[in-house]
Length: 212
Ligand SMILES: Nc1ncnc2c1ncn2[C@@H]1O[C@H](COP(=O)(O)OP(=O)(O)OP(=O)(O)O)[C@@H](O)[C@H]1O
Image 1 (cartoon, rainbow, N blue to C red):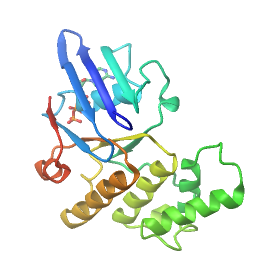
Image 2 (cartoon, rainbow, N blue to C red):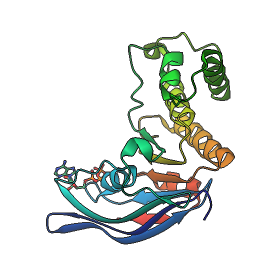
Image 3 (tube, rainbow, N blue to C red):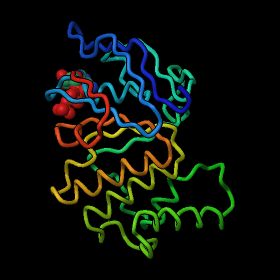
């Protein structure tokens, strides 16, 4: 499917334990599939496999990852063009908010004016007008989360992997940030794989639920 993220026959083993068994999954552009399961069941390992950094010295994995029809299974993480967002926003403390977003931009966009324009537009899109020169430490949790999302989106990913991205936010922020993430994915036609413990996330995602 054009623009989709697809997993084909993915099996992940840790020693004698099989964490993921022959998983087939297609996530259409703009759709959100949810991965749930108890702690230690392999949710983060599945995302690591899709992103390309599952530790081959620890896990045995097979199967294919397709992004927009391209089999990226043999590509290193940086060439897969898969965006990742974690529970911790991982903003660089030594860079301004604008500097953090700038860091997300592909190096192939060289023109400085264009780079600045893209960052300003992303900040505005996230309701962070005028935040470019701020120190990330001065932002609220919700503002940081939005900045981190825009940094990922500026990297022009073809799919998004989210590992408990809402879990540090309080209930109200959680709902609004979730809506923002899903809206952005829909508008940009990005397939999303979301790891969560929260059934409300799965309900809001309104897509396939994979139980590990
Ligand atoms: N580097 C590693 N070396 C050895 N075992 C590991 C390593 N990373 C993860 N594991 C083990 O692999 C299993 C799956 O871990 P994983 O982090 O994928 O689970 P999870 O479902 O994401 O858990 P949680 O909900 O707690 O984040 C666990 O038993 C974990 O202890």
